[in-house]
Length: 389
Image 1 (cartoon, rainbow, N blue to C red):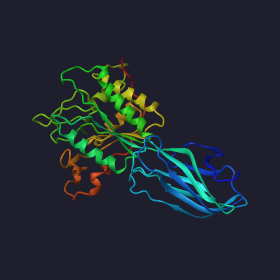
Image 2: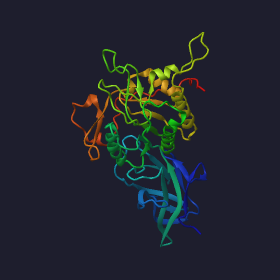
Image 3: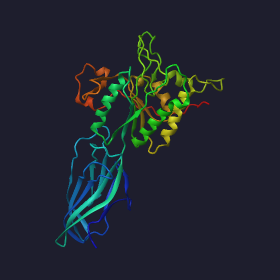
Image 4: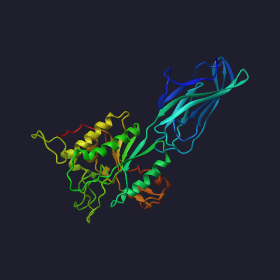
């Protein structure tokens, strides 16, 4: 019997999974010969235990004549704020017209937008409604930030990070995610063992799976490009934290860590110049941990578009950034300025901005956006360096 049962279709086949940016068609199973006042609504539908109501995204109006749909108009319904960085859109085609609309980002979607069709109209003078319950799941890229799991006892930066990042996520919970990484519990003088990096590998791998091809942003501590002191006596080597280490600067402003990675570590792991055939680096455990991370990230589908080091100044050393990209075999970006936070830990209204912008008036966007104007370009992976026993 003719009615309003319909489904989403792509390349002539019914589909229940798509990606943001795709286009699908709406196809009627058995369209009526004639129908008036037809409304075809694309509805965002909560699935399972999602605590939200259904909402209209786009509605197409028209009529059927000789079983063909004639478009009269369409209505796209705005669902509030958008993510300035990730702007997931979707296109449905019906009645000979493509209807492209924003997918709402104001609620946590669990990585999938769930869409269905709600259709009504008049057939032979009678009101007919069809609530099509089959869902189309639309996947989309997300930005996932990795932060310390707790405030530090001596490193105050952890508290600033943990205050700001929930503000960042709250602007667009659908496209922004937070993953926590445990703080290294060991004493500074203990030697490294392979298992020390298990939590590092777990947290970043989890973030990559949640990103669905988006970015993983590592924000677990500090870094430097190796040029901070003009006299060459302080921080003359580029470095960045890989895991949260709750340690304090000494009287001369130096940091000492167990598990960070430095430019010296990275160059130490390169193939030796002839006539040498092999070399044993001083920190093979660190290098192998980064190589293993690369294995894990490259095995996750879809692969993340970047691993971003959201630590101070690391992007000022292009050699270091390229070495990281080569070792991890994932595109890398880093910051080229000091990152500052302004506000009170644990209270709303924290600002995040570049030190170079300190003298400028604070902007409301600095409460919800990570600074990006001084990010490096992408460092693309080159030839992977060797691994070590």
